[in-house]
Length: 465
Image (cartoon, rainbow, N blue to C red; front, top):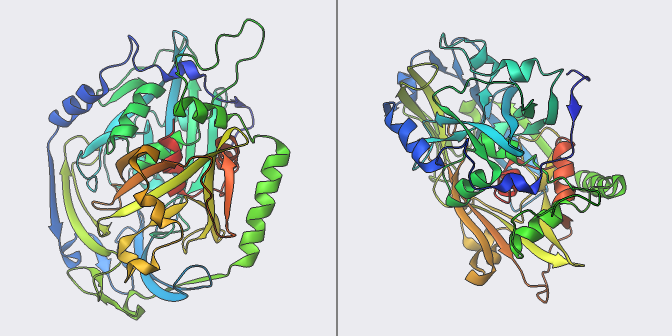
């Protein structure tokens, strides 16, 4: 990574404008790009997937892209201490990058209307400017080149807002990480906007996130790196722009708290304590050696129908770099939920996060949302994780409830309901020892520091733009 690129503290609240002369109507643009292409998705047996081989693991004939392998887990975190499961192994570090440009004083983000075969509802959703693994942009698949890739590979002279390796879904991926980047283009630099791309403001993206299933997971993890910059000086305009009093203003205020070195050091020390407290032993094994799992030509599934299954898909899409391909996909049962509880503490909005062990994490444990609920993992509601009762909080406490697709390139119909619950100050929450209250400024700083906040929590934080 070059050390010449300059960095900045964050974005101005004025960038939350809902529209500018340079932006299209986001809904109409998605509809137009969806109508401009044709798509076909067909389920296939794993044994019928061209160029994929199923033996002790499921892998591509090229040795690239990804594989599906078995994993044996032992841990003292959570209700289950030992189990086996399939897991996706994708060692390549992909690029998730968004270009930003200030147009007439307002930051705009170059978003891509991208089809993903696993997306529910809208197959075409807003994605990062670049969303590609080395296998993709090195064109192992023989397809078209990746637009705008050069801005993220040759960025030494540009302003870099965000550049960090971050983890992916660590219950379904083993040690998966991507390079998350936000790179600014100078105001006077012209950029040709391709057909599937559009400049959008933060306000427009926030509105799309609130509606659900319109901004994909890979874009959400990059957007979680956004922080709001303070405007200083006697002539500085109102730092909140047009944001009215209420919850969203409290969100912006929370972004500006907890950013000191002392705050970050205390949080990291607490996380190290949690890593020392819990154990995790995750070992790769043959798919054939997984207890309670059936591995056959049709798919890989749990004998009791729990957790998820590995299926095969044949996909055709005229808008993608490759017009037709086949691949395995992980398909979970419906009903996944992630929720953040927030509460004003000492006058500042804080969020309750937990230190959570997941088998695919690079370093055992990261911060997760207050509740991370996967119904297929429990035999009985009594096994639900702590504080799951807040999923039934009074409607007046709920600030966000939106269904979002997970990584539609690897997961099929993997929808997760994202919930933000704003608990009154007078209400007492009895949380376990591995939970901690943090303002958004501290969480954002930890995101910028690397493997500290998991992707489910980052996805929720992106919805708080």
